[in-house]
Image (cartoon, rainbow, N blue to C red; front, top):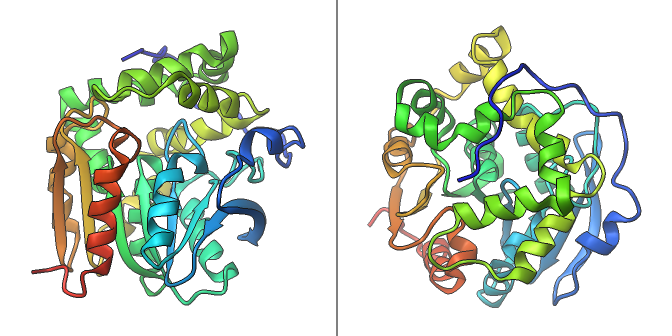
Length: 324
């Protein structure tokens, strides 16, 4: 795994700007889905949607965008769901705002999109940072979350504890510490045609490596102006707020148990989020909770083995009694 410089303090807010017009050619990738924008929580969000039925909202992680869910969009639509993959604030085709990258506000983005889509609730499916935000949304706005699926991310309290007290997890997640230096990490991510971004995706994947076209797509997307900065800001908040009142308040709020059925998927070879860090997350769920360790997969199981991941996802969503 490529390490980033771990010295320095928090970043500086990006200037206010919507996603530039050039982003559309990168983000609006053709497929059976439809692209459009929706307004929520004071910002504009790009989504790709496919299918009809109960809403399943897909939340990407770092350093990706909605396209990471391309396989699951089709699988969910074929299974009878309205599948929607959104670009998080500051990423892909969504607005780049000067502030608002703390997880509580990002979770309100997500539940706001659910309401803007005219749905009473959604099954949230989150990977990496998207998983962190899915945990958060389920705790903060339980009436809008029907079910929860998280991949490659512990519960926020579990993540915080592991990063502070488990040396092996702190080392595995060293990129988070590296993100704390202002401006340097975002420049590193886009330098040399975003070569570092490509290396991170390859280093964090298991033996089933992404092809060059896939990596190049993410390299182009991270180079959309302000994207690298906005992608890093949530991690800056997560670290620099640990001893601040807002961070302590958020950590207390996350004591609220998740009260919806939850499926937790994790690649056995994930080098970024260690299995033992993620596995204890069930203690924060006061509802049916299922843990699935996906053998031979790394940090991106939904892309490394999309067929197996989609089957786990669809079968669990269709199970009327997931606690069996």
